Length: 190
Image (tube, one colour):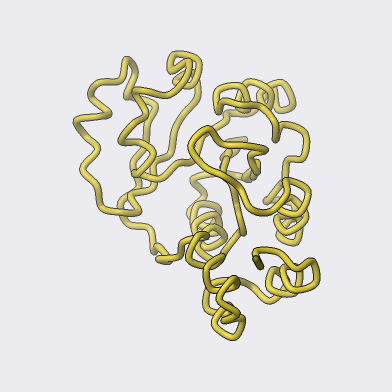
């Protein structure tokens, strides 16, 4: 099987995340996907706890969408991929990232370890990343997808709406089960 691995903060998970995953599955680019919410990011502060973010993600769990709750505290993506490869030893793992992250891929920790896996780059912002990819030692296992239907949604914008008390605007960006969870657990409200 070809398993996509989508690592992110999912703070909160929104319709854009899910739409992109479903497109990759429907196009049969991947057989299933493993979503890994990060426990921490070196360049981001997180608002909801890892447990809350995992619980929100689990509302999407199915046979083809797996929510990882074991590898959330690994500090680097290559470590997450190596750990998941042990769980899925007979499957091909493909990291899923946006072009905004691919721009700095050459700077990622243990790049050689990371490039043992295939990488699917979603061209979200229509960035020309060809020069950056040419700098990589093995660019032949990187696939750039340019024709995805992308939802222009930002988790930080969603959090701001919640903080501003504009809960009636959330259904454009979040599924109702996520809205209910956020309200029930009083998340993102200062």
